[in-house]
Image (cartoon, rainbow, N blue to C red; front, side, top):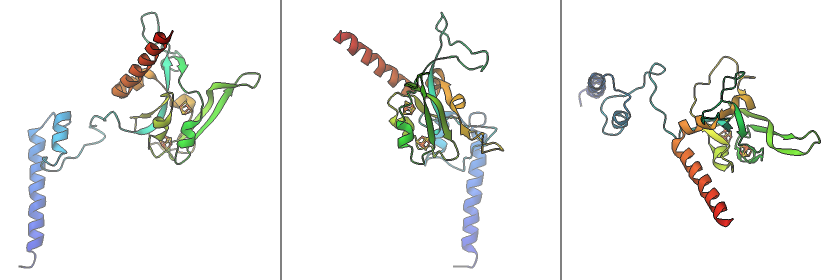
Length: 212
Ligand code: SF4
Ligand code: SF4
């Protein structure tokens, strides 16, 4: 084989791929992140190289995407069934925290990055809610075990992956205030999971009513 022929062949392949990429970009101009098209372009049938121009462009995140967990609370609703906004926090006001501080999530967490302090009454009796709840997001490996094992659907995996900043010792230890997100947010990012929870809840209520 002539000396350098392999190199030429390799460059030809690279050049062809590059041209297919440019042709594909022109062909799909304006709808590169269309969900169906994205699946096609990233499959074995796709031609050229497809890269996401992050952060200007962000493809849709699938429901089961897992990033640092958050705690779910039921929001307060007004007379029309709409969430009431807390003037101080700007977030939906808390009606009920799902977390009972049972501690299962912290026990199953492989890198042990969850710390929980259970709330108590003035007499010192334990209350089924956390007084403090911390997750070290630099240690969290996003495995989702906490969400899998929580018996109260109180902890879920988030979709917010843009958490980088210039300080990691304080701001990367998420506390209760940071971790709390309303069930409406959970429903928005996990529509299928939320529906399953609602169906389970309704089925349990119906079974209870039938017993009575
Ligand atoms: S397992 Fe669920 S209910 Fe128990 S402490 Fe963790 S988040 Fe709270
Ligand atoms: S996602 Fe995994 S590593 Fe992160 S807090 Fe939950 S159990 Fe721990």
